[in-house]
Every structure is written in C-alpha cells, then in structure tokens.
Length: 339
Image (cartoon, rainbow, N blue to C red):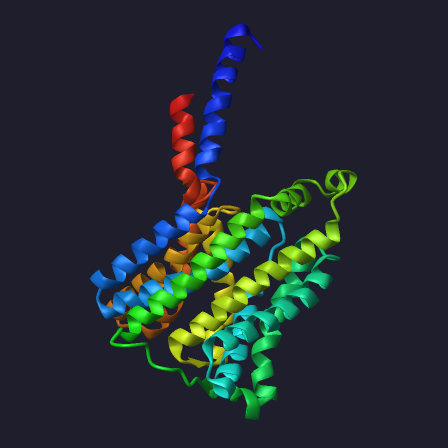
C-alpha cells in the first residue's frame, strides 16, 4: 500500500465510524415509518389503505425470510405453510377468546413450536434436501384442514369474529395501522438481532461453517434459532392476513405463495431488510398489475397464471441488471461513480 492509499484509508475511518453511529439505532427508522404510514392512511382511499395493510403483512414474513435465507443461507420453500399455521391458530383462538392480543400470542407460540421442529430437522440438511423438506411442509399443511374438517372447516375455511375498530376509525385504516404496527415491531427486533452477536453468527455460518465452528459458533443452535425467528415472523404475518380477510382457508396459502415469497426476497435483495420491503411491495403490486392485464385480455387462464410469469420475468431482469437485488442498486451506482 502506498503512502497516498494509507492516507486515504485513514481519512475514511472516521467517516465510516460516523456513518455507523448515525445508522446504528433502528428506532429512528421505525418512528419515521410509523409517521409516514399514519399520514398515508389519511390520504389514501379505502382500497389503497387495504393494499397498504397487505404490504405490511407481507413485510413481516419477507423480513423474517430474508434473515433466514439471506443471512443464514437456509432456503425455505414452506413459509406459506407457516403462515397458514399462524392464520389458523389466530382464527381458532380469536373465535374462542375474542381477544386479539391473546390470539396473536397463540399464533406466535404455535408457529414458534413448528419452527423448532422444522429447524431441528433443517439443521441436519443442506441445499436441495432442505428445500425438499420445507416443500413437503408446504404440501402437507393444507391437507391437514381436510383431515380435521370439523375443527378447521375443510376447504370452506373458518370465519373469524372480530371486534369493530374503536371509535369512528374506518376499518381499512385500522387494518393498515395494526398490520404496519406488527411489521415495524418485527423489523425493529430483527434489526437489533442481526446487528449483534446473533447476526454475526448467522453470517459466519452462511459464509463458512468450518471456520465458524473453529471460531466457537454452535452451528446447529444458530440454524435452529434462525428458523425459529423466521417462523415466528411467518406466524405473525399469517395472523395479520387472517385479520385482513376476516376468514382463513387453505386456498389463501397455496404452494405458489411460498415460491412468491422466495422470489420477492431475491428480487428485493437477500440479507437486507430494505430488500424485504421492496419484495413486500412487489408481492402486492405485481399480482394486481397482472390481474388487471388478465382482465383486459378476457382470458381466465391467462389471468390465473400471469402473476407467476410476471414475477419470473422481473426476477430475470433484476438479476441481470442488479445481481444484489433492488436494494443494492443505489450502492452499486455509488461504487461505480467512485471507481
């Protein structure tokens, strides 16, 4: 390294420390996001508020999935099934207790236990074997509703008894507030986790398991904890979707939902919570655009399959233009300008 390079490196150190100090507290982002969401709900019409609430519900699961896949390297094709587990747990608890906080806690406990079971099995598997296991979970869980049709309502599903919004707050605005409250709390907790020792262990296991083991990282425990955290996020997301639809059915959590979730975090940017937000936006916007295009074409077959085609095309284009996902475009542009 030349004297000039050493001088530039020494000048960059204070700047990097300063930037880290400015961005290390995620509470500022949560507060700013909450203010923006509340302001938007007073401006947008009811249907847009419902779509905004749907983005918040998706953001909850994509944030957990990007931590599991992007930071820990475990590929899951069964998060749609975990969402269904949380949704049914919420519906059963809500119809029995009529208390939403307890129902959400019940959904979190159920999906956390499911995450422990799947995570213990996933810690022994790698690559396509892990993907096959989670794919089997995504196939098996919807069939359980037919086995216990008296309790889970079979293909007809379950309707959920919900209390009306407090005061004169419109239902769509209330849904947006609650869904984004769950999303922002989830993202705040995940940001705190991944910036600490847990996040360092996740990245170490993802990059090199042998080196992580030599450094004293418990590989199996880290992988199980990653799956448990991600499963809890999926369970909360499922509960929020049940709250939005005021009902739950196996058709709301098909196998394609799990595929969409994986494609969304890849397009948004693996390992970045901002990428998870981009993926959540795409999960709402792209199917809506595909449905509108299918309705204009007048073909029901095209309308049912166009969303998957659009997602595939967007995935190919983004991977060619920005391999790191949409969240990396700004950083790659800045680095090219510096070079």
